[in-house]
Image (cartoon, rainbow, N blue to C red; front, side, top):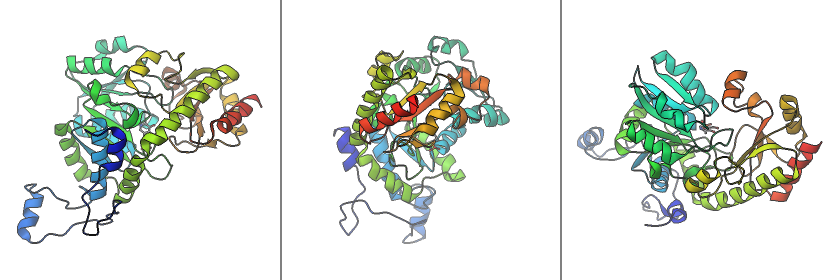
Length: 387
Ligand SMILES: Cc1ncc(COP(=O)(O)O)c(C=O)c1O
């Protein structure tokens, strides 16, 4: 089988009669049929083919196929955003009365699903702290259905041991769902460690250029079938245009990621050695509490670094105001370096107590290291820290 760089480039739809080299964009909402019999066969799924772009489209199919092969998954479905992937996946699989065990440190909107919306449907959750994996088994109840985690986590860049989570999920017959957004299919494949489903916000490093939103869930075919049927009826599908962009973006994912990770490691080392930034966290820094686990499950350390600024909230905001090159933005995984202050932005809707429990201190800063010259990025950060 081809290597991941080749899969990302060469997995492609069959060419049309025009023999195009690059996949064309199929901007069509629906598809035509020769006769009533062909239509019946398509709707009854006797014949696999495109019917309507809320169900499938050639561009979304190409994008899904690439991600599925890169992740080692049997099947997948693509969504309009990462959050619609998270929501639709969980809403498909959970019933009233079910329970989720999740790492406490999850993306702010995922946390809102668990705490504000799922309780409306009598779906409960229990969090475990990222450094307390040994407590997970004691939190599992008879009604627990899903074990959920991100690794690395947003925004703290903590690492969970996927092999350990896979073992626990198997032992207790739970579905293991991993949000693999910070790692991408190039750096980490959770299915190898026992995940049943893997979710990505394709908006981040998969697009990689801050242009489009997208999401995808890949994994076990029987579960994807359920997710497909739910999504076909509820309508969160990825648009063909965004799928076309994202599929093209995947062709350069490995080269982009190599440079993102090289820049990020260098910046993390310099922040630790040459500045007063505290508690610099990057998965491939030797000082990371889970360095060995990160090395075991990731190819490289990713492009996200977190650190704390002495002086808390005010000092954090001042640092961000002092930046001249790096962008102040809430996105991540762009060619451009982006600096975010989670306590006042992405995780601003959490209570102060919830933030502290999730390890988000008032002075925590998250950097998504881009592809600019690494010395230029570092000098901007250093100057902003010292001003
Ligand atoms: C880990 C993680 N999961 C999911 C999402 C949601 O993705 P989207 O913004 O594409 O809905 C994000 C967004 O930042 C994220 O960081």
